[in-house]
Every structure is written in C-alpha cells, then in structure tokens.
Image 1 (cartoon, rainbow, N blue to C red):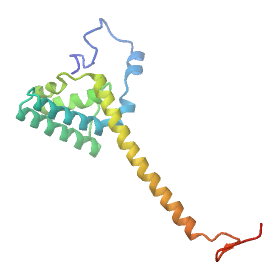
Image 2 (image 1 turned 60 degrees about the horizontal axis):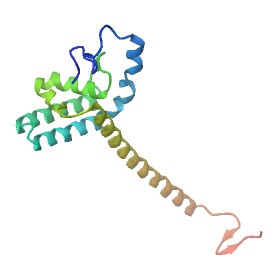
Image 3 (image 1 turned 45 degrees about the vertical axis):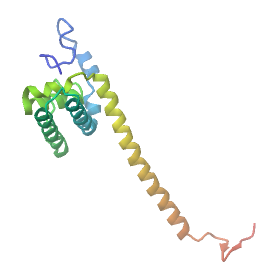
Amino acid sequence: MASESGKLWGGRFVGAVDPIMEKFNASIAYDRHLWEVDVQGSKAYSRGLEKAGLLTKAEMDQILHGLDKVAEEWAQGTFKLNSNDEDIHTANERRLKELIGATAGKLHTGRSRNDQVVTDLRLWMRQTCSTLSGLLWELIRTMVDRAEATQLWGHHSQQHGCH
C-alpha cells in the first residue's frame, strides 16, 4: 500500500520531490490500459491469500466484491483517477480502500510491486497475443476465400496460358 503521502516511496525521502521527477516517474497515462488484468491478478492473489490462511473467507469475499466494483467503474468509464495515482496498481488499491476500508490493505500482504507489474504485463501479453492470433487467422481465411473466388487471367479449366 502507499504511504500517508499517497506515494509508494513516500516514507523514504525527506522534502518534496521535484515535479519533473514525479511526472517522469508516473506511468498511469500508459498503464491505465492494464486495469482489467490488474484486477484479475488481484482477485487471484486474494484467493491465494485465503487459501494460505492469511485472509478469512469473509475478507476475501469483501476484497473480491470491491474489485468487482473497481472493474465495473473502469468498464463503464466512471473510474476517477487521483493526482496521487502513480500507476494502475496504486489507482486500483486506492479505490479498493475507499470502497471496503482497511481490509484492502491486506491484499498487499507478501506482494511486491515488481510481481504485480510482471503479472499484469504477462496477462496482458497473453490476452493480446491471443486476440492478434485470432485476427490473423481471420485475415488468412479472408485472403484464401478471395483468392479462391478470383479467376486468374490465363488459367482456366486446368489449362495454363502462354508463357
């Protein structure tokens, strides 16, 4: 979870961070497109925490319900980003905490930000590759259908034209 300042690294520095550095460090403009896989990863992680005995079933259900609401807001275009949201993870965690309170903090138990980033990117890449593969097959089928429907000059009735 983020510090009281709302920043992931807020407790490690003294004084204000230069606004240029804050802008450079913020990735929310890019990774906001990862909202769906971030929610999926968080849901799976909460199930793992419950299975390991680190969350009660009630806590897991509360987190899952909150994450469903976060996903619903993103899908409907009503999710509101906050100026302290550095990335998709802090945005979703902040909103989850607003929705369900302190239980949201338990989702971060034993979880590193690097693990979240890698998990999100792998899930996104898998979904994107699957989508691209389907679109590529559709393109190939269309090209084959059009090729079969097109009569080539000089070729008909199994006879080749002059060379």
